[in-house]
Length: 98
Image (cartoon, rainbow, N blue to C red; front, side, top):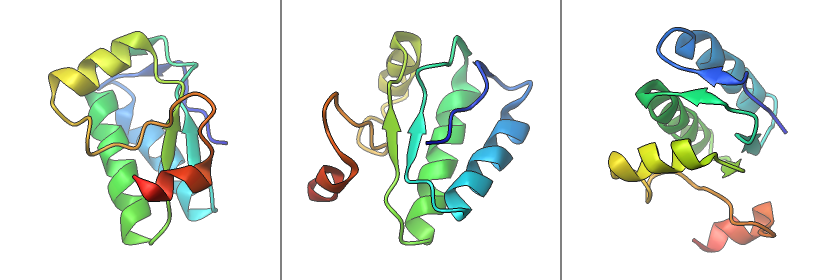
């Protein structure tokens, strides 16, 4: 499971985006966001770009363990329905039903 760096802000979003895109291209279907300690709106934009890339490739993608601050930004920007945030105990196969 791909895990981005602890910081995902406008200052490093391009580098983190590219690393995530490589992980998706290599077959990763989950991204663990639990290690993020510093985020800004660029984190949400990066998640949306990862989601679009996975959809274009016909692959499922789930985000696991989003931090409270990241959840808050996702809600603030109204993109809750656009990103597949896995609930605790939910497995990748379960996401196809959402």
